[in-house]
Amino acid sequence: MTDFSNFLSIVEGSETVRERWAAITEKAINDARSQGVTLEVDDVLNIREARLVAMGAPLDEEAYQAELLGLPQLSKAQQKKAIAEGDADARQAALSNLNRGQDHHHHSHATAHRCNRLNRARELGIESPPEEVDSVSKNERLEMLKDVSSPQQRISLGRKWGLIT
Amino acid sequence: MLISVKNYMEATGVVPETAGRRLKGLPYHPGPHGTRLYSLAASLPTMWPREIANGAAEKLVRGASAPTDSLYVGGEGSLPVAQKLIEWLPERPRARLAKVQNSFVVSLANSKICCPAVVANYEILRTLVVLQPDVLRFIFGEGEVVDMDSLAAPFALVNNSHFTMEAA
Image (cartoon, rainbow over all chains, first blue to last red; front, side, top):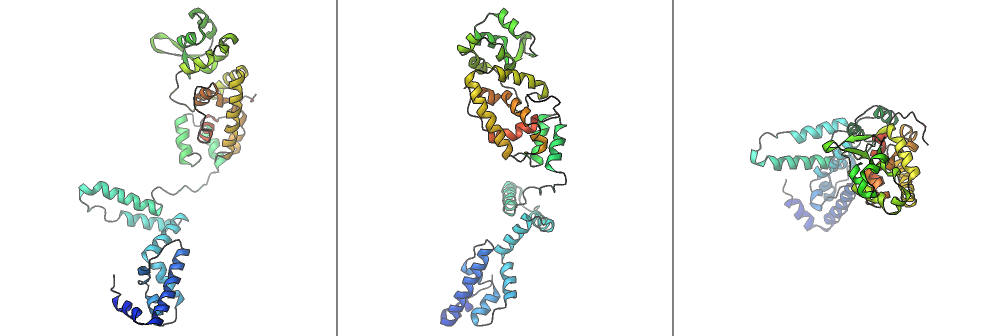
């Protein structure tokens, strides 16, 4: 991370800058909150546009939004949202990212790494395959199940199709 | 749920000959050592009122062994057994069954499988539910209250089929 001590000492030194910095920080935190993410004051430091505004430059809303959404916390939230909405590309990207470079761990850490990966997958909501697109209506599925003679198989199909929990 | 002739004798206090005569003609599964295992639901209605008054039904339910599959109750072939059992039920179990059946219908209606394919058979399913081991135990006061919210949908899913018989 870049060292912001210069910037911070300017903020310390000038009341006007301090006020502008407080205002833009508050705005950034509120904007992030509306996306469902809590930002820390220190996270706002990473937004170049916010630092410029504190120095007195007019706010370039577009660049500011782009940088805000580019913060790791927010981009993760965006990704999660896209996956939840069923964006296949976002899901694929998240999955390959998750599985990247998994072969270099020492075998004694294998379990820990698996747990870690599973946790990360759960956070993103990609721990299980996406629900099948319902091309067959629920009623047709139930009609189909009538022809399955094994009770166990009926239950497992019913679960698979999301008919029962 | 299944019972042996011994279970029946212990519950009712009848001699082996009487037990054999009453259970004769009921469908059975071969049990260990050449014994016959009868369906609990089919055996209950063979009891006499005096025996029922002495708690024989509860005893028989207590002695019955639970099947490995507690959901599937035998399809259309079991419907007459269920109907006969319901007709026979003494007052208390009958009142309890009515409650169980009500919550079965409500839970089914609230479930994801409340679809024409299932609803068309709901009366049959509502009758068959009496054969489910947990229900049977509960209505005779030998088991916990049945958690219908978790039972109704899987039960309906497993037992729903192309019924040809009209529901009673």
